[in-house]
Figure 1 (cartoon, rainbow, N blue to C red):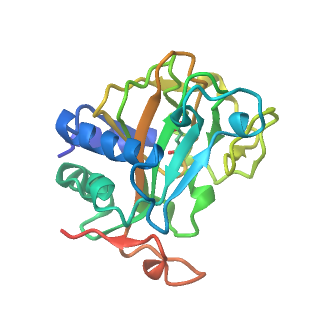
Figure 2: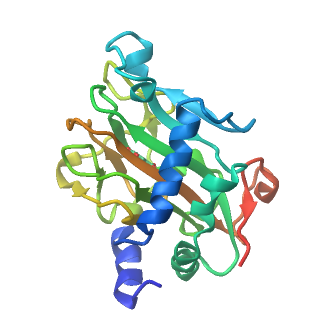
Amino acid sequence: MLSEQQVEHYWREGYVLVPQLLGQTQLAALDQRFLAFANGDLSLTPMMKLMRDVMVVKGGVEAATPLHAVNKMMNFEDDEGLYQFVLHAGLRSCVQQLLGEQLYSLSTNVFNKPPGVDGRHPLHQDLRYFRIRPADKILGVWTAILPATRNSGCLAVLPGSHKGPLLDHGDPDWEFVNAGFYAANGVDACDRVHVEMAPGDTLLFHPLLIHGSGQNRSTDFRRAISTHYAAADAQSEHRDWHQGKQARLIPS
Ligand SMILES: O=C(O)CCC(=O)C(=O)O
């Protein structure tokens, strides 16, 4: 459960860090499962996608191993093993305190940031990717599987930026930009705060919070597992989002 101070921090700053929310046994199981998919020992479910890093794809660097070429794995909703993360009871309780009792999950990712590639994730707002409103009824979760430090490319956030509007997004002016990594326009990165995290630490963040991550300059991977939740009573003008391919009701 979140303390009153943590709840207040979330609404004031747009994020809250929950130390050691996931235990080492569960993290190891999630990591092993991801590695089995990434290394081809398990077949992907029809919805899952393994994304290759753009720098490897364009020949800017040669990947030392197949895993060094993986940038992220998306859409693991239909894999019972990985989806245990989204169903984690402690995580659900924290999110329920912020969004209400009835929750859906909306999207899932494992972010694998290998050493040796650019791999930066430009500063952006996740609401850019969702048509559900209001923004206060969506929340992103990012749990470190491996250490996330400044050197390995931890998340950086602009505290309080969730109080501003949804900005226009475009392509960053970089040579190697991974597919779908858009940058919020006109952002001053000076005030960003680096959120270093140990394995199991979990960041809950508002979908308007401006955030991103730097290059992995360490010699190890930086890896995290992530999902978004929405309150069941959130709305979309476009369609009944509860019926979306990735939307899943979280049992309480
Ligand atoms: O894992 C990363 O480096 C970035 C993740 C991110 O920006 C997100 O979850 O929206």
